[in-house]
Image 1 (cartoon, rainbow, N blue to C red):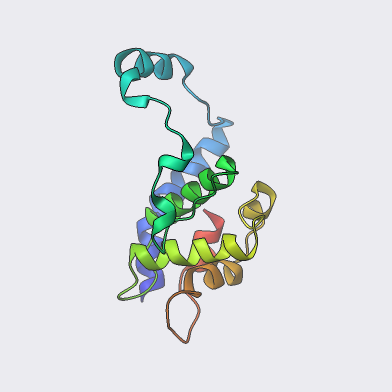
Image 2: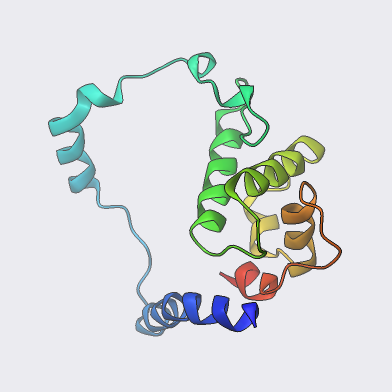
Length: 147
């Protein structure tokens, strides 16, 4: 059962999250590590105009030159789902990206933090499957929506 396989894969992440929650620890940004990284590799982070990026030329990446935050939200959701699970046989990165891109084109508020915090598995299934032909919901969407 693919649902059980996904659950096994994500179980350690969920357990670690629960342990951190039980300890009362929050996520934080290590400002000192960021400063060190910039000092050592700052030349690699030269600011590019958003118009120089070519993500908007393919069918599976979302890009909005007028709204960098929305583009970054797309990347956040794409990366989170990309590293979390693959719901169906023959489902590839291009399907994931195209589905999420279509979601944002239809509703630019879809990835707003409040909406992501209350995301339902049925909505996630719609996002993932809108550019992939299949006649069923994504198994394990419930577990992934929680993560």
